[in-house]
Image: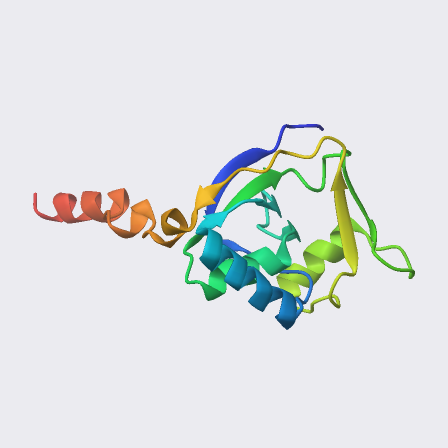
Length: 155
């Protein structure tokens, strides 16, 4: 099934890494993002599990800066044949299920193990860093179910 990836500002707390990240690269990206004040290249994420497919270093840098959300393209990872997986270096093949399992269990692959590609990659999309730091809309709003319960108990 081929669906166009959806762009979203995903709460950073929902995301799951499947691969380790290089501390030097994270520090470099933190500096670049601080200087530019813009997040330029959205990460790629599996819509169903919130597993990061591409962008572990950008994810860690945004998290260090205190971002509450991160720009992401959401893919139907398991079912989308346009999203392919191979390795950056030699080694046995890795499956999409192994990537999802690593993220779920927190047993991370080494830095730059997996290489995800998309037949028609989504375009870069700039988002001001300040927008990523702002509280999520739902943090300031009471949940509808809690409000209904309170109203129901007053009757």
